[in-house]
Image (cartoon, rainbow, N blue to C red; front, side, top):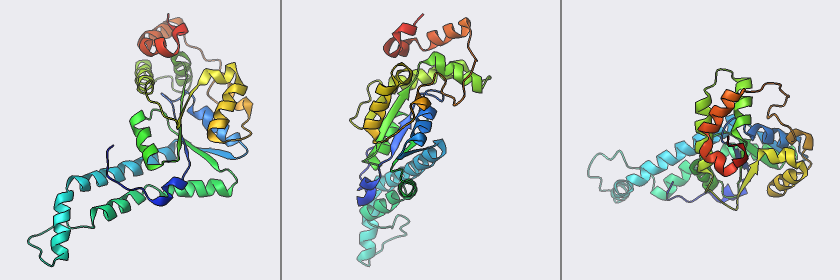
Length: 267
């Protein structure tokens, strides 16, 4: 979003780890639990991510509105200060830079409270997780939190669907696959030195390498390897499996991005 705003000076003091994944059951919950086992880290959940994002959306929408009528507002404040009001002026407000700075400040109170709370516990590394966050929205968050870091964790759709149906048997498999394909395509070309992409299966294939990458990037220490080296994203194991017909459906629905990320799983 192209907005003319100046961030508050203390925005740079905030250092959250922003985690997303293509769907639920694709790795976000595993990383949240991982951060909660660390010596100096904690992983907050989806609700806080949603609430911070709603504050960003609210602030951005008002800033955009005032920028769209900035000429009217500038004229109104000029006439008022010149003691020459010529008409009813509902747009009479603060100068634009002061106004937008005040609106933007609304974003920061909750993140500062989270960071202060975590720091008081000796857990300076803190994260929030939410599945299905588009790269454009992550970029918005990264803009207002300039010292944040981002993680995109992904998992093959066969296992995503299997765990999803274990928890929600009536879930629409085609919708799950469409979401997986869309988000995987979205992050295919999204790159930043503040973004780490993690493949869920790597945690099982080489847990030491996976944890080294995660901890080096975030600064977290002492994460329990047992939390990430699991085949089910649930904290509990499961014997639930999907049949061959459903596997074939997932392979067809996700074929485009399977060809990029998991070519060995194409039927």
